[in-house]
Length: 466
Image 1 (cartoon, rainbow, N blue to C red):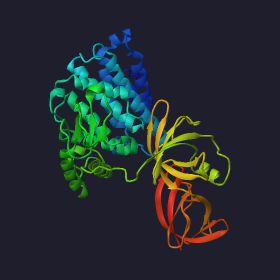
Image 2: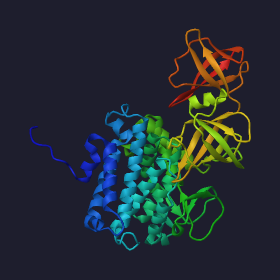
Image 3: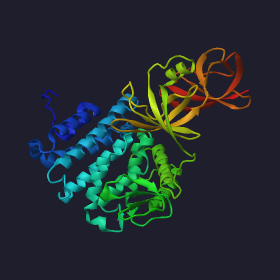
């Protein structure tokens, strides 16, 4: 105990961050960025040993500090708020990008002539960078898909007709990249993304890339061109590989039966039962012969819209007050149930995350509509948002149970016997029975039917109009 403390400059020590995983991730990224630059003498001195050591240590550090890993170890998940996890996720993404770039700048690994060991490590780090970029809501990295496509195209497996995930090879890593892309990690919450990544790797021996086309929608890639996977059906041209998850669907069905009996299969390790169930059912849906498809026809749109972010701003604009923060984005298509928006910039320097409430006012239209962000993809200069419309003609009301009153936004027109959805602050007090809603000089009696969703800043409750 009386011995002087010594600083640990090993990769594991740096990533430990003195007990702060975020600090460790950021320090590791800074270290790798300082060492590995194309043509730098520092990169030649550090060589493969340093970046591979950070690679190994990073895998362990991410597993230990991820939300599921912390919970399994009875760690302080609840003490880490949303902002902390946002920073942690950005740190994981940046660290894997730094490892990937470190391998790439080593000569001769920045060509396809590197040793097999370096090329395998590089390919694996590319997959991790792609996976965590998707979890952090970033759009697919064309540079990374170009790298792993180049590596696979130069490998012996590229001349085969089928590439499976049961042999450790460049083909397996390319397959893993396509598999992670196929499950839309940018549309799920962080804990779900971590669970999905774990289950995808378990299923890898039962996945394949095939040159033959099946009579169902499949993700298609052309490695030589470094293309990003695209789901299509019917078309075929030279050089295409098609993602085939059908054998994994049988495995997932067996996992589902075990989980229904509250048995966590051994390969799942410490993955909690509820996360395992959710991940398995999600993958069964995404990899089925009839994957989720759009149910509403989309129409191209070329319009601009003013945007209000958050419950407070939406309440203000519906009340006729000026937009608190000027924000005008482009609407590129719409359907009966939603909009797709391209955002060029934001005064807050942060894009809306999934689940955030938005107010939308078309520049050439009247009134405000309300929507919830269901999809986010970020690029260097803009972001793409998928919005689910919640209310086309919202109005304001006050809910009162005789003891407490809460200001809310009514998403529907009250009609006797029908459901009425109401947006309220996340910290609104629980209302007793009966509840009355006052709006525009009228009063309606309500019965609570429960909470539809809770997010940071708001909750959506549903009532029956009596």
